[in-house]
Amino acid sequence: MGTCTALLLARKGADVTLYEARPQILLGASRWNEGKIHLGYLYSGDASLQTAKQIITGGLQFRPLIEQIIGTTLNDITQEDDLYLVHRDSVVTPDHVNQYFGNLTRLLHDHPDKEKYWGSITSTKTERLSRVELEKLSNPEYVDAGFVSPERSVCTQSIADSLSAAVYAEPGIEVRTSSKVLGAKRFDESTGLSYLVETTSDAEKFFHVVNCLWEGRPKVDASIGVNNLSQPSLRYRCSLFVETSRQIKVPSAVICTGPFGDIKSYNPKKFYLSWYESGLVTSTTDVLNAVSPSLSDTEKGAISETTLTSIGSVIPASRRLMEASTRISVEGGWVFANGRGLLSDPNSSLHRRDQVGIHRTGNWYSVDTGKYSMAPWLALHVSHEILGN
Ligand SMILES: Cc1cc2nc3c(=O)[nH]c(=O)nc-3n(C[C@H](O)[C@H](O)[C@H](O)COP(=O)(O)OP(=O)(O)OC[C@H]3O[C@@H](n4cnc5c(N)ncnc54)[C@H](O)[C@@H]3O)c2cc1C
Image (cartoon, rainbow, N blue to C red; front, side):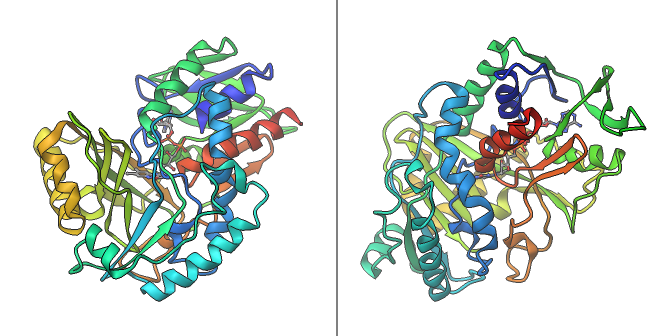
């Protein structure tokens, strides 16, 4: 969110300072996630479709916007329709998923941006798999039903590298790394429209501030009296980023709906695997004081082993990745949500993302991206608001 916003502003002539607490930009959640460009299918736990309505436009516009921002075409993208496999312990039944997908697909077919996504989402039917198709893909002991969705996922490390290169090539952006934002004060009390931002390395006055610090956002907002939180939580999740020496065919699938897992094939030699309970390193509701965990090699090894075993027991084809793997990186990031509870609880507010977006107070913009797929679209909105166009 920060790099996209900085690039869009600087290219229109604004002087931008980008603060980053870590030694390099783009080492957080936006480098290490699954890269699903959401169209709402994951949120069958929110039958009201409010979450889907909140995130669909960002998902549909993601591809053209990010390609414009990084100045190149995206390559590592899942090539086949994403499968949703309904786990026997899902918080919603297969019939509910069937109905939800039908409602969502109708919403997508009426959307003005429907042609901007990969392929034609209007020609994809969100079909239920036959029993034979399902049993070819998954273990019937765990999976009750399967559905096809038009969603795609992108390799987020490639995009992080391209974004980073674009930021450093842009003369209008001054990047201050190893510079943690501690808080801010209103600078001009008469108008309240400029801010003194204090960091571990300096304090500087800005006319506009975009707070898109993700896990660090609530604390910095609180320092200036901004509070747009309702029951917030932070979870630190790790996943496996796998490369293989030879081409392996595995499906791209989500095991839904609840604390299960995912597998993605960005190309035949590059994969993502996650199993929720194996990769959930820590979670807290104390969002003002969360500290990023540092994992030993032994802990990473345990996450890798349990993730591979768990995914392998539901999607047997994924076991082939182990023999051919040349690299398995266990990496992760924070997930912020205005929601709490357990994914195994159908009433948990974690099944919703309907409050995400831009919260403006004066010239202070606090942005909860909610999803990676939302960042370019939200960045475009913030930049338009700041530039007044
Ligand atoms: C395992 C996992 C899987 C996910 N899968 C998906 C998915 O498939 N699709 C999807 O859309 N979303 C997914 N997400 C969510 C997605 O990763 C986030 O919504 C998105 O990356 C957040 O982007 P951001 O720019 O807001 O935050 P970030 O990319 O985290 O950027 C925030 C930056 O601020 C820096 N920072 C924090 N505090 C401070 C401070 N005080 N001072 C200075 N710098 C600071 C951080 O170091 C970081 O570089 C997933 C997340 C995880 C962890």
